[in-house]
Length: 165
Image (cartoon, rainbow, N blue to C red; front, side, top):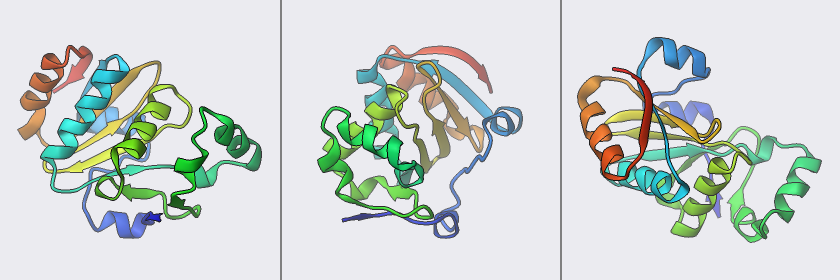
């Protein structure tokens, strides 16, 4: 069973947590890019593998019953959902606790705008907000990793749409 953490437990990891995307755009250096699903998914895997600790948020438990029912019927993902222990408070999950099937599921539903997830990485301290019209924003707490992220993006043929660096 995959168990999440609440905001208090999650905060102990000192991830770059942004409650509002507009605040993030105003306060932090960032890069916005677009990509096909395959390269978007690979980009997240590469960043996660470079990090000591990485999390994602997953708000399934906050959906109402009609939204959940539609979700269960979507592409037969009900077996994946059943592997999580949900409650409305514990929405932050460690990427190390999931397998490739669940990772691909989370990135796919974000990419397809079904249910958005944000990804948090600690080393370096960056946050990836997913999908607004196939656009993704990577926020940086400091500048140490911007060039490396841009290189990874270029190697994967991600298109950088704009940046504030």
